[in-house]
Image (tube, rainbow, N blue to C red; front, side, top):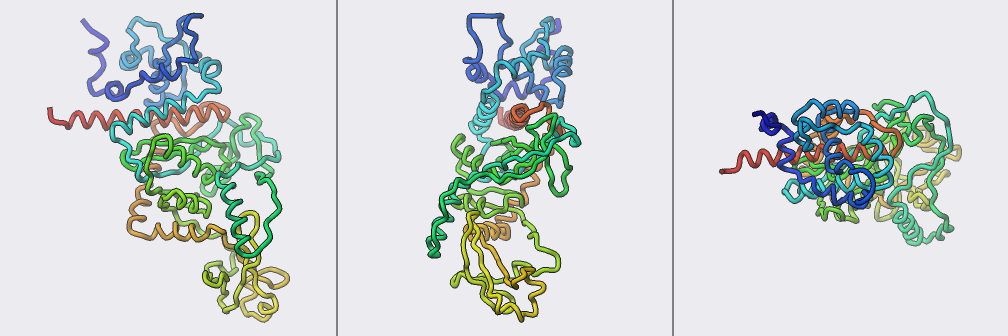
Length: 442
């Protein structure tokens, strides 16, 4: 007699997953989305999502192909609780449930969170050091078919705190407060795809140009468990949602974060200030200054903190002038003294011969955060980026079909990023727990 149980190898990945992960919570999460006493019996929600996870775990991007594979693969049938003689549900079941039952819900986020909680319960998440970065997913949209429209840029998490800092700084320098004005996002011309309007036109050094989505992902340092994934259009800067997502992880999972490792895209004064306010040490990559060729660099001017002035290489002081709404203090030279300066041609192109330097109100926090990168512990933390979040993205693209957006629209992209991250966590938990059981004394 041959049984389905005997046909699945003992070391198959799905056996490890079945032994390590409890999927029963999915039924409780989705209970309110099903009618208990009307209509045909539905596909069990845990079976539906387990089938989706099979697709991500084994790199099957097409849901139609996934159902064909489930039909002939005994391991997949065993994992879903289907007998050899049971019919497999149609692939349209996925799309119909997304469109009719799960649309407008946070079910994918809740499933992701519950899997992270299972990892925490097994001691696989430390939470002391987190690594964050973003990767792009090519949208299903032709980069040559677009309209140009005026669009508001994304709102930064730190705007309210910046308004308070600007008011305090102007008062400290004896300046009148700025007139109250709601801080509105900057309006700029943006390419909007005719095929997928939610995708953003991405232009980054060393990256392909076109319509993309961004997966902003945070990984824990202990076992590379993904603790957060957040999806935006491809033209949203990495730093925009960062602080809000960090707060969510600390609150949702009660993580005691001590340090974070970030690339140069997060090297900004607002991020540094936000980390200090949260008592988190930030280690960021080096951000090369964008100085004009042939002109003196800002680092050639010395900031005198006690006198609150900049001093040029010729010794002239550039005193404080004002603080603008964007949080920058302006320091201006005396044109009468600059007129005879031998360095004037390489110092400024201002027709009045006046040099202006700016310094952010949170520049001190930025300098302290930049200094962390040069310490021994900072070098060790930053060096692990390639083993943690960069490795997580590499696995996602190579093994979990994360190079391309499977669906059109931001909601579909969020669904994909959350389920792909959940599948990666499931695989990691199953692998580590299997190794523990294998190595534990009988």
